[in-house]
Image (cartoon, rainbow, N blue to C red; front, side, top):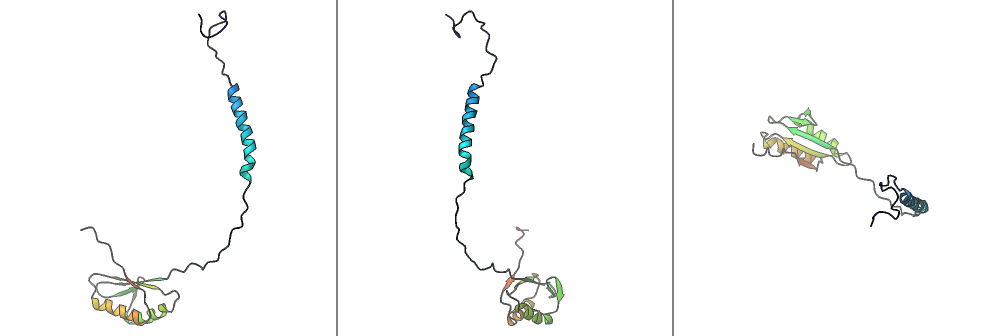
Amino acid sequence: MAFGGFNESSNQAPMADINVTPMVDVMLVLLVIFIISAPLFTHAIKLELPTAASAPAPEKPETITLAINGEGRLFWNNAPVALDELAARFSTASQKKPLPELQLRADKATRYEVIAQVMSAAQENGMTKIGFVTNPKDGGK
């Protein structure tokens, strides 16, 4: 009883040729599927989208940085300024649209009297957006 073939007289060596017929059949079937389905991917649905009008985004207000060092000297955007000049500068700054934001940066050794004078001058001349800028804690150092 022999396994592997009907002809016992033939050579029993393994077949060394690769049978590519099933692979060609699969490739041809895939080619036909892609040829048929490709036009379906190119069609687009025509839509009439609604239009909407919106207000323009509001402008970011200017930021004025007013620094006060430990001796009470003032710095308007890093430029030295006298306390007497602040009222005029606040007055011109409050006329801008949108109203600028005033950021106060005071040294921890600054006297409260100077800070109060600056805040009073700002409020009297129309500056309503005032914020204090501080440094975060050093993590226990």
